[in-house]
Length: 404
Figure 1 (spheres, helix red, strand yellow):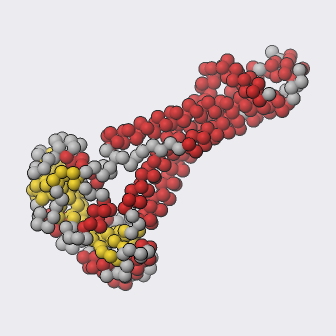
Figure 2 (cartoon, helix red, strand yellow):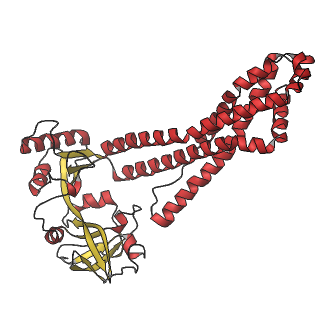
Figure 3 (cartoon, one colour):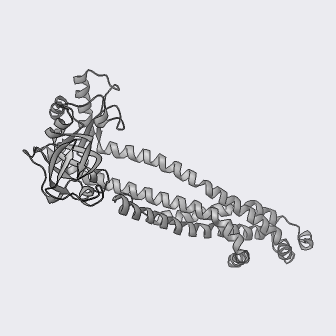
């Protein structure tokens, strides 16, 4: 009997193809938006989580300012060499290193761009930052002690993307009107900003920006077997004592990478929920469209309902027929919407890789996402058909047969 109901519903949809197509547009758009956003969100989250797993959980980052957004080289409460020495002495700290960075003017040939200029240490502690940032030289060599006016550059700068002409080994670039020789070309990291950085000696960076002791970030390597969270709390306590601050008044941030990942997941989850909520409005519109179509379908098929009731169909049978039909509207709309959504997500992934040079934005289409979207669209369609189906089931057979 269920098969007969389904066939009856599909035949009704086929007879009204244009109306059926227009009815399902809202479902197309809603499901496509939801699927594309969720797949891109899951892909981005998985890529970032993978990066954090590669970095390991035994690193801690200390930045100036009372928040991650307000930190960095732009904070009024900067870190100093004294802070670095203090951190190195904290129990559980294996080693610590520093980074100084600032946005500077970078000139090549007759073209000037703004980019981050990174001051890098060259002692053994620099390995901590190298592990974190994923720096790997593809051509030439990295800077080392004594390379005062030499630089290494990110992937975009030597791949015809940043400047009009690509920068090659031994080319001369100017940073804040100071000339540097390019001695190393980094491999692609995947973040467009990181791939456009210029790296010079720490002391040279401070010299050209007129900063004597300021530190933008301190990176900490935790001793093996120590809990990074406990070490981070110890660093906070020692820095509060040194700066004569009460708990909660910190003008610095001490973050483990697990903290950063949790914060990212919370913020990203809220943003994703809001965007999906907005996209779901089109599903509501689609549901209203299905309801309207089902009411019209009941009116047009009133005589058919009368015939079915005259030959013994019960109210529940009539209601099931129209509920199945409205559910099929949602199911077909959901199927098409999923295909469109996957296409949009893959197009965004391709665009991010081709034009932004980023491998982080990837579409991750899971089986639960597909079946969840199908089930959701079917439920939306079925719920939209409840009122019209109930109206159809309550029609009196004699009146339905006389309906013109």
